[in-house]
Amino acid sequence: MSKMKKTRKPGGGRKKLKPEYDARKNLKEQMESAVALYDSEMSLQAIGDELGLNSIKVRKLLITAGVYESEVAEKVKNTFEEYRETQDYKTSILSTANTLQLSKASVTSYLPYKKGVYFPSTEKDKISVGAERQRRYRAMKRWRADPTEENFWGVVVAYAGVKFKTYSGLPFSYEIKKGRSGEYTKELWIDRREKSKSLAWSSVLLALKNIKGEVVDRPKALGDIRGVTYIYGMFYRFGLIDVPDKVKEKMGRPKDRKK
Image (cartoon, rainbow, N blue to C red; front, side, top):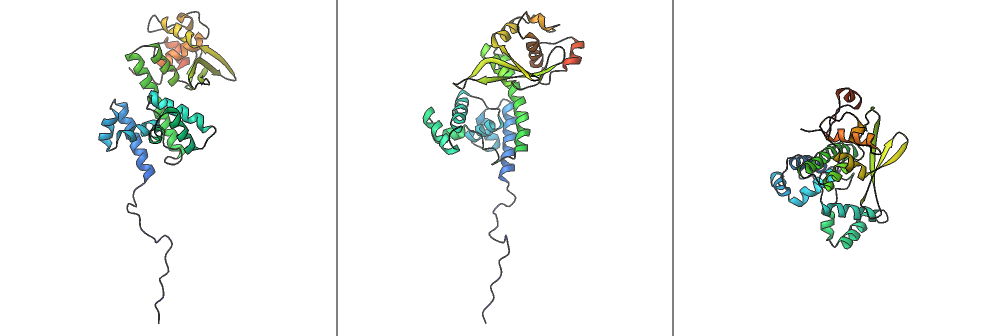
């Protein structure tokens, strides 16, 4: 009499070598750790040594978190996004590599991990909030260390989309659009309620030069400049000026100011 074959139980195949290993969770923890170390001014190599990773992976983690910035990273990002409008993901990588004269591996290393593959959208959003705050802080720190027009423009770009308040307490934000070349145009579009109006970069620079003291009583103290009421709110949020106590009741207190 032949022996009956044992019925295979569902899911009873080969066991995972590391059943407790969660790639998504592990990568998320690595990214959070890398961001924390990067914010403490550690180099990519030093962060890699600390986390047991190579510097290229560290950079990719920081790019995914939105805190790493460099000229090459910006070019790869802009070029890739332009190709993605008409090509699939893999083809866009090849096109970007050809355009920038980089290897495929190099292009991939400058792109963030694909959204949804490693991080659920809710977790990614939480990381982005912290990353944006750190990006603003780092931009301001660069400008304070080297107060050039270029570095101040970096501050303005970093604060795009942030909520501000005018002298009278009215909320507003601004956005900066990109031209055909992929570069930001030197014009801020103020978005308040249903109307949008432009604010020239030259006006912002003029107001910056007119800051005479720490406490600025009213917008006009920065000069008779078009859009100065918005510039006043921006400078207060940036931490460049202080306002009278009675005005703070309407404008609130700057959330990103660090002494």
